[in-house]
Length: 408
Image (tube, rainbow, N blue to C red; front, side, top):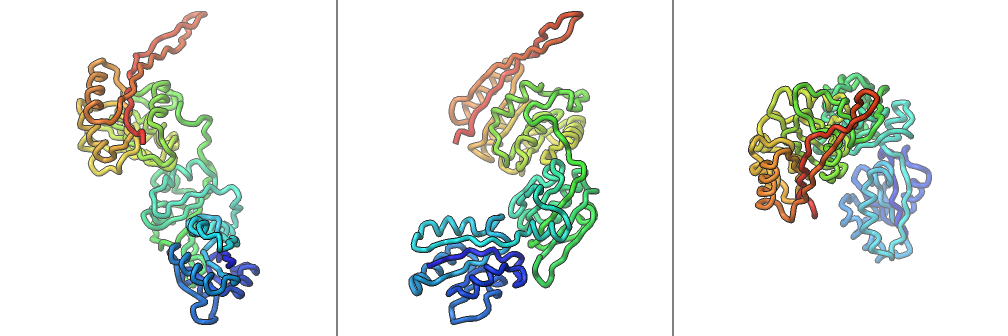
């Protein structure tokens, strides 16, 4: 049996391509969501089936193949089959059935439709899926001239727009399109701040245009120390900070706890290194908390969230971490490590120590709590300083870097 997975665009008959319309008209079986299979019209009993689960679709295709092995079937998908489509998991299942010959037929994606309505070229758009997951919406807008968001589930259009507004990008131009192709379609246009005040259904996509995205002359890690506002709060120096971020082994969507965050220098580096993740900067000092917020805003790390309070109490209720950095423990290192491993036994742990006493405590705590043997390195950095007509090397304090866990 020939199976065509067809992109139905926004789900209206006029939005179908000529090829898609022909395949639907000739098919012995048409399956898909109820609003899509309505495009197929009538036919013999059982020709049109409203199914959405991939397993049910495969079962229906196999049953049809048993009846008419030389026939054809169409599976209708909203939008385009190559753009965040249910066609992807369905294809994986169909590979196990070589008796079915499968082809993909493209349709119009929600990105194309919204950009056309907005009169904006979409070729350079940055695409973020916030459908069913938390996304760093503000960070995406800060770094790109045009950002498109798929929303729904955990993060709706209101949440995306509110996050972008609260990060200081409320004056950016934005469009929000709900239920495109349906009778209740609605397109809103205004600033991010104006659109953030509305409520939207799940079937909403958002487009934000930023005329002045942040232009970075560097990539994290390795932000120069002078780019951070410091005040009177200690800061992890650039060379050590770079090694810390490397040892944390961050995925792009990692959840990070930075405990004793100080100025937020490590938090900011982690936020930029994991642009789709979330960084929780835990800081008990009000001066430090303010510095973290200002540094994150200035350097475009919109996914850094300040948690005011003392660890381990302030860690309660935070999302389970993939990686934890402890730069200051306030004498609670053991409790902090236990809280991290209780939340995620596979979390990657990195601790810095200046004193031998803290090093010994870290060894003891990790020996009791963390699986495997921790790695320990002593990092000694010297920087050149001009003295008259010469340059002399001036040593910074040695720092011990202790890392464990996260091996799975």
